[in-house]
Length: 88
Length: 344
Image (cartoon, rainbow over all chains, first blue to last red):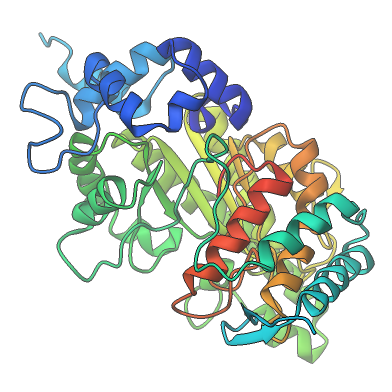
């Protein structure tokens, strides 16, 4: 929210918490957020397959979900969409 | 008799001071900011909070739970183990960086231009693996456009000779060359998938350097309306190496963070990073108090997120290649608590 929208931290936290349906305190609680991240496919630490499994999105896969959830244009996601768009 | 508390000097040296001595250092740091930067002093409550932070004997200090801020980094990784993409992964996975930044070892836009194909390919590879926003960073670095590194006359050689007009002309020409290079690299990296561009250490060569950054930012913003653009300043005060340069009708020489922020936001940044110099002969408490007093109004009035530069020799962090964690954590916590920063 800061990088693409220039949103200040207080507003950014409120925006993200609202989109995720969690409290402001939850945002920095790793116990709560791991479940939220896994349920919504937002990525996390991988830790040799013990935290994220092979069917959990990581890297750019997770970024797609983040862009969609937060309703923001993410440059790397937009580029991937453009590169994989049907040709011919 | 007051007990002594281990604390740090601006060069990182450990010293023992009493609470009264620490309080005196904090008040002196605030007074130094008021005198030099013409800012308002900190309140008594804010000074008391700084004293509380610096009177602790604990190894580490931290903000309250729930008050965490985002952490951005200029140039992620040491580039001496694994690959540059591994560096970004380490920062994301093990240091919990909120954004990561790919960089070329030379860390200036001009040399990055010469290896742009490699930089684009590396950015493309990184984007597949990184979840956090992944950007590209470098310095405007206007000095690289002067002899012996570049085509223009060197104003640092011309000025001592009294050739002021020639020195100014060289700087004005360098601005245009730098803007072209910065825009070319930024656009190329955006096309390779970069989520943001970081113009770091802006203003290092003075007002012309800052002007190049601002003009480049405006061009990048016009071409990429949704791209993140971060600027990190070189120092607290824009040096007037030229002296007469303006951006949007505002003279750049002599600008402090509050005015720097306004111009950077007007040009199109989404994150502004003020840099306040450290005095190595004063304590960390003195430096942190001075830093916070200088930046406070900038933070209060900013229309974009403010990430205070906190690292070797800026933001109250000691000027040492391995800044002690006790000093770094105190400087960071104090700045976040008092300034309500958006990030570091």
